[in-house]
Image (cartoon, rainbow, N blue to C red; front, side, top):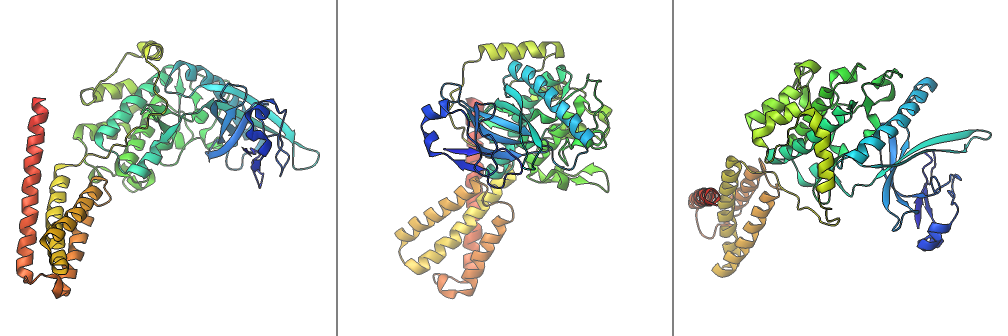
Length: 469
């Protein structure tokens, strides 16, 4: 069995213990130690780190198993490990915040199904690698959400469509309203902190930067512990001032822009004009665009002041809006948690592709018709068999259409590929099947127009059937 050492300075953290492949021995063994640095591997005597998950501004996360739970339930062990150089005073403040955040997370995780539950919080004191000293590490143990975060979805499936963004906004805004009702600000909303479980439900992760706005016993500067993500944080957060519910709404809007455009947040902000430049890169309704722009205003008091305000503004676009007064948000969430049937754990959602605009459909049809004609002419010149030519052309054209549906071919590809094919036929005469270049041009353009006509007809038929049904 592989066990991962959690000491930050360990140069060879992966350890292998063949005897622990036997689950009975894993449950009963007293302790195992890193073969490289001597760090205890069974955290708090029960949590077994088996995989490194990632590192953020506030800590390092590991996938672990709880050997004291039947079936050895998977969980996430997060080690407090702030990045950058902190003074002793700053480090002490960060440790106090980390412990306080564990208490907050224990409360909100147990009350809302879309926030991972907290299982444990504990320190571990071990001998330092420097003789005569000790190191102390702090750990959170949280529920493991088996799925994929939205940053990974963006990389795998491409840009989000407007319906997909509306789904994200509807679910996460409801979670934020619940959190804000508890006088808590998340402060680190971004695609990598929103996880889609295998059954499709979205979860808000990484409350390591959470702040209780009513806490006055500890003065904490957000910049001192690096608690924000560059590009997603609004001015009041980056400059170290107080944060508000609208701070999270700003970050959620930036998250939406990132998912809609596929561009890094820092690439969408024009520092010269102090404005977000994104509308010309996406096709969304003006209503949604106006709402996102209001969430992105520089002044906190000019944005929407609550998540419910945004939900109310979006209400007519949402399939099932769930806007409630703040006093009722917690009650509704508890009722949903009690009444919702358990979700099948192993259902893999089918990744949805971004919706195509009318111009994209027509452009794709023109490309398919034009390119298909050129391919058929070239293949007939080589094969001299109408049946084989028709079959081969259909297969190639089907592949090109499939590539368009997956957005592997889009935008300028629709011009570049036919241009290359045309150049090949133009400069290699024996690929013209005895037809002159002018006739080939006419045939290809005619095929493109026919394809456009067929696409328009099928689109009209589909809309008529949709209205009837």
